Image (cartoon, rainbow, N blue to C red; front, side, top):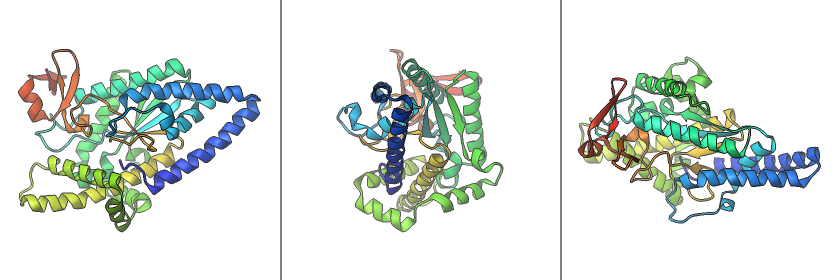
Length: 336
């Protein structure tokens, strides 16, 4: 979720060191620099497939060489002739605000987003024969207590994601969550483990928010989301704002902790993000569907099918003013 952190810098440094070693190994084993250069060409072509979907707040297009982190990561997989692994933290659970979503289970927004990610991997396979796969790192349990979503709803959401992947034959996708790491431990114990082992200190994070514009923007964005997602607060608006600001720090702490855990379990993977990322950042922001706000995701909105055949993500309250509700398998799905 954050843009560039000390942990990101360490990850980038490690990746660069690994890349140097892998490059040397490739040259030594094959005996020609042309093989490495060919891998670079393939890596650039793969990145060109991602660029049209870059989710960023920057208002300028950027060439592939402005993304050195991603080129290194993709190139390492290409040189080893392995499937390119992309990790995407997200798909946590539906917003608890009924004015934004249709329910607590995945709907058409998720179906379309999953299909998009799978098709992107298939297109990469046309350039890089071993193909690609996206590991969806479903992070609902990491934040459940902070975003005020019941753990049973998070389990149901994640299980339905896996079912949809199987039902739709999305062979390039898989779901990874805390159950894969910590099994059947109580959810509170899992959260405590991740926070205590991986999260940055609160004082350190507060200082970064004060000093770094990107982190400040992230903090404000998360605070806004927490405000918008709260539907049943009985206190004053100012009290809610104070509470959401406090919880926003916790969300960022847990997000960074989850990122560290993902890096540990999926080393070398290309890190995607559902949040806007600057050009050249260690994470590559990816836009799943069209939306008027670069922060909008399928789990904070409802899908609207426009008359021209395109899709957009909008808050439920707005989407239902523009179209009629459509059901799928007996559940609300989207607006037409």
